[in-house]
Length: 152
Image 1 (cartoon, rainbow, N blue to C red):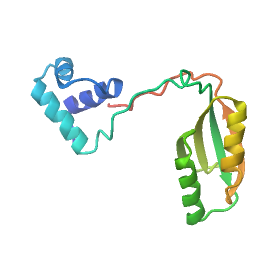
Image 2: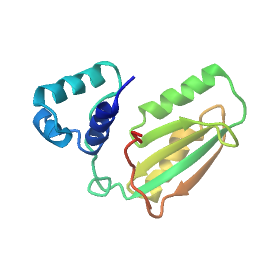
Image 3: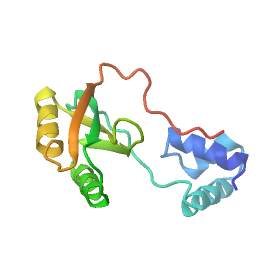
Image 4: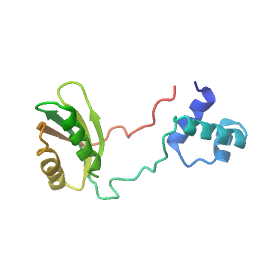
């Protein structure tokens, strides 16, 4: 179990993972050593998995963001594993989720243009043995940016 102070630390670090122990202690009204020890404990216990930099897709020329709904015609553990491995190794797929319902997977992809998106679909997904259908939905505008997890 974690307490309110630990939740505050998680909240603040999700907004700025580069906070030093001193900055964190000032935001929490605690000692620098206490803030540092709590951060280390949260990392050790797996509450903090890693630290990331949010990189601008636009600055990298990745103007197209799309979601791909992938349906399988049949299921088997081996084909699911192969599909997951293929998607995991492809750098354009930023995230993948296995779902219930009509689609078996939802993929988030970033590309420079529509031609590259089409190539990703045709070269990577269509030829997977279990894939029967890929439906793409191009993001017109991200109405809400990716946000931190709720910490209470």
